[in-house]
Length: 256
Image (tube, rainbow, N blue to C red; front, side, top):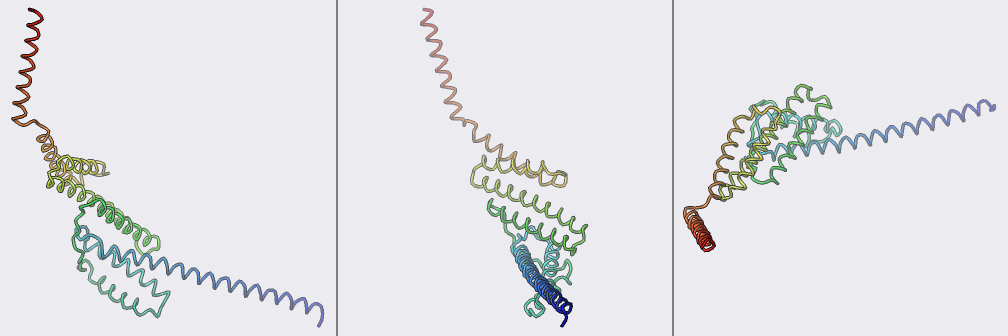
C-alpha cells in the first residue's frame, strides 16, 4: 500500500468520524428540541384547560368557549404529531372536534363566580393574563390570523374592565349591607375613577352612571352619619347659650 493510499484512508476515516459525530449531534439536538416542545405544549394545554374550566360563568361566552376549544385542539394535534401512538390524545381530539363542530352552540357550563374579594379578582386577572398569552402564542405560531388575534386581545381588555366593574360594585354593595358607607364610598370612587381612565369611557357609560349613583348614595349616608342628631343640636345650642351668658356676665363684672 502506497503512502498516498494510506493518507487517503486516514483522511477518509477522519471525515467519517466527523460525519458520525455531526449526525449524533443533530440527533441529540432533535431529541432535545422535541422534549422541549413537548414540555411547552403540555404547559399550554394545562393553562388552556384551567381557563376553560375555572373562568367565571358571568364572563364566559359561547364565542370565548369556542376559541378556547380551538386553541386546545391545536395544541393536542401538535402533541399527537410528537407521539402518534397516544390513544388518550386521539380520544381527546375527537371530543374537541365534536365541540368545535357545534360552533357558537357549544355548551357553556361554567358556573357564575361572584367577584367578592380582592383575592378572587386577582385570580380572574391571572386567568385573563394566561388567556392573553395563549392568544399571542397561537398568533405567533400562525394558528390564529393576525386580525382575529387582535380582536381577541381587545376582548380580553374589555373583560378586564368588566372584572373591575363587578369587583368595585360588589365591594361597595357589601360595605353598604354592613352599614359601612365610608368603605362603600371608597369602593365606588375607585370604580368611577377606573372607568373614567379608560381609553373610550363612552363604551362603559351605563356602568359609569350606575357607579356614580351608588357613589352619591354612599356619600349621602356618610354625610347623614356625620351630621349631629336633633338631641345633639339642642345640647350644642344650650351649650352656646350658656357660654354666651357666661361671657356677658364676665363683661358686666368687668365694667361694673
